[in-house]
Length: 374
Ligand SMILES: [Cu+2]
Image 1 (cartoon, helix red, strand yellow):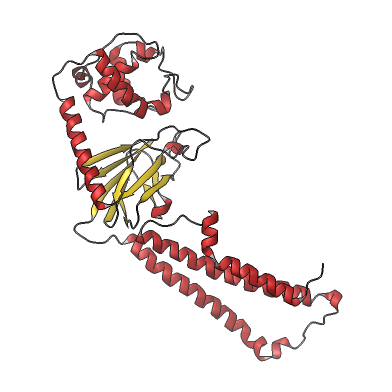
Image 2 (cartoon, rainbow, N blue to C red):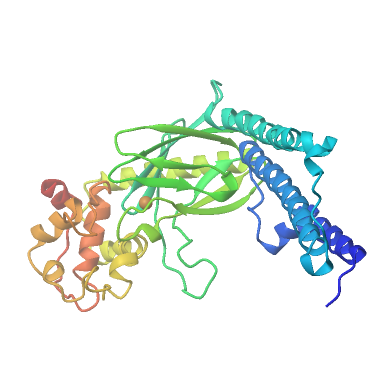
């Protein structure tokens, strides 16, 4: 194969051109996802600046290396220049080239420093929206501190072959666009990490500590992330789904949540005696969203980590033992405590588990039973 200088020049120009069109790479899915907020955009821009600078440097250095190897090879009879160090360029290149490289480094560092300050310094605005993000084994809790709303977000099983496998939750983290939002990160048990690529930052959730990040979303959409800190057996089942909506849609959602939470509370606090069928219906809906990820919709579990409930000793044995394990969990296993659910919800789940999949105990557990078992 024979190269002449113009062929090499054409190849170099072509590769430079390809790299210059960053958007082409973006569409191929090899770049970061399009940012959804200003801070995220700043981080994205510093990444793009660095990539462009390093790509240009890479092309220049490789061009010089390839040129030198090809044209100065021994078989061509090239004689090494014995006088290079006595020329002006030979003398000054050792100073000029490092100075140029240092200049480029400082340009990147200056930009990076500015971006870091934006990321870490949460704006001191009075009307910033606060959301406490608590990591649990293995779900997320979002407390909208300004609205008095609590959202529990849990993984929901999806088809393994689909795009949403391990990426779907029951309740999304709803956020408004055009509003500064501060996240307060913490954990209830082990280290987790909150990470949604479109929001750009990743923050550890540390038990006993509260750390901050912030964002102002500039576009609507659904952004998916996940826990980014190895946190135990079901680390992979801690997806985060952010839904960014307009301020008006967000206000409507807040009102809906408040009404639903008040209704649930009022319902749980009535003295009503619930029938088996009522509890089973409520219990199935709760079981399918909160328990089925481990114990499966069929009650068959995924042994040995997640035991079956169909025909199990717990679900057909004494009611007290069943209530105890649901309320308090089982230490050193994946069974977490569900005591944060209200009395009616626990009564419904336990009643359902004792009367589904052939567990025909006929037991009806009332909210009052749960209250006395706590
Ligand atoms: Cu985690």
